[in-house]
Length: 114
Length: 113
Image (cartoon, rainbow over all chains, first blue to last red; front, top):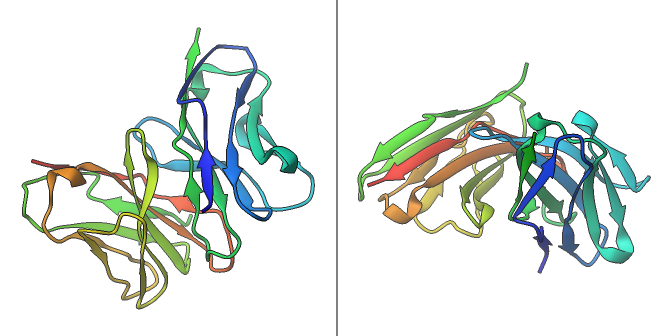
């Protein structure tokens, strides 16, 4: 069965430091991959997506993610974190043969220290 | 601008009552989804629809129902609310086709006493 694992439930980084949030998926073929961000009390907003092509994808708010087929990973990165990046981040996989459904990881909560 | 809205944003109800949560999208998307979000579980799919008069069960559908009478709306009904259904509920929509990004509503916080 397809699944998504975000190994880190909570991460704290200092403002200005770099960030990497991990995401591993289990799926037999190349999936469609997404990262969403959820600010407190808000819905989910799409940060970036990977469908095919270049394995390094750029998103909004200075985020990027790299698809590594050999590691079944799609880690999210940002070179310099801002206090406004504090939020919960969800990785999701969209199996191509399941009509648009997404499978979400459990989320990683990011705290930013001043 | 196109959007997806949910109402109410907050709801308190009693055990055993029927509750309906509204979801309305102006994207003209064929696909609509209902999720619940609970601590430690991420988002879990309740029901989804690929078009008018189409509905499907997700992984946590027991105690919930949906109906799709037009493209814009997918109301979620809790037939007899239970305390275990206290949660935050999100509606989402996406264009038809194999896989597309989903656009999310702001959520409804439901408390069942």
